[in-house]
Length: 209
Ligand SMILES: C[S@@+](CC[C@H](N)C(=O)[O-])C[C@H]1O[C@@H](n2cnc3c(N)ncnc32)[C@H](O)[C@@H]1O
Figure (cartoon, helix red, strand yellow):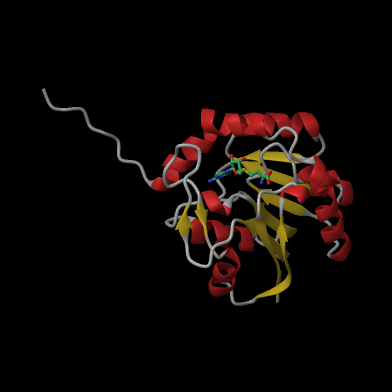
């Protein structure tokens, strides 16, 4: 009898499966209260840089979109995620916001469809093999602004994450965006700590020129 074939899977598929399943469901449970302290950041950002349509890639249950939808008409606010439980919660919490299922390496939106596209704590979970594709999708769908809030390190460094290997990478995401897309101009950069509702996040807001 021949030995069973072990299915080969790419890192991308492995991480997408991780976030789609129990691991991702547990994240939803842990983050039910994440939204509240984030209001001042979003109010400040969207007051200085007003926009009329927004996409969050990796939106989970809406800890960011809750505040985005206060400043932008909710029917012009979209979130995409690979975890179905997160999207069920997002639809329950923010029924007028558009909750879309899918992997963010293949965004189902037209070029330049949104004024602002962004990730917060999502590029850190992308493997090297798909990171440039994910970033290019986020840039492609934006007409004007691209925001990225992620864990920073000058050189790429893997960080152990909840008993998983190859699941979280600190990188210089701002530099990576500018290297890949030289037309992006930095408009605002900052740091978001626990008081602001994030876990030591560095953010960069770029404008397409
Ligand atoms: C650490 S959470 C961040 C959630 C949210 N951005 C926030 O700031 O609260 C990462 C989110 O990205 C989603 N995600 C991770 N990899 C993804 C992928 N390849 N495609 C779509 N969603 C993904 C996860 O399901 C999860 O909801």
